[in-house]
Length: 141
Image (cartoon, rainbow, N blue to C red; front, top):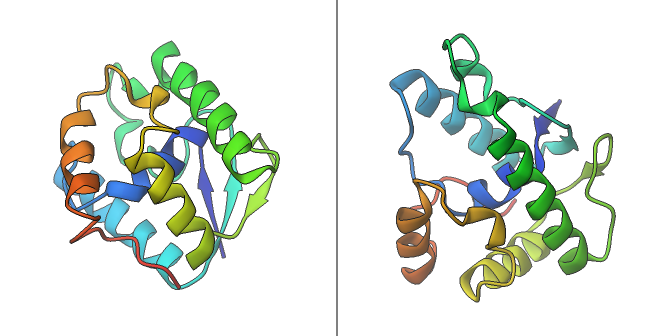
């Protein structure tokens, strides 16, 4: 199977420790982290993805806002530069141990964090990175 992800969720996954907007959101996110940890590949999409699914029924889901699309653009640009490969709609990506380690290192040093500016989770993500990604749900396969 394949996990559909928008570009900025490539960054969010790096520090996900089981906290989220709602219990349904967190349960869904846990399942996605497990699937990726088992080696499922990623299909990059524009707009709402598999992580967004539990929130799409809300009247004003933030997944549909321009701010989320802006985060996608910034994250795609930074991850593309880091990995020296296209990060855009329709591209497949295997998040193997080497890529995960490289992305986490870049996140820790701020190389790929511009998309995170102004995000309500930025403080938590920074703390998780500072704690060497202990307790994160996504593990290298």
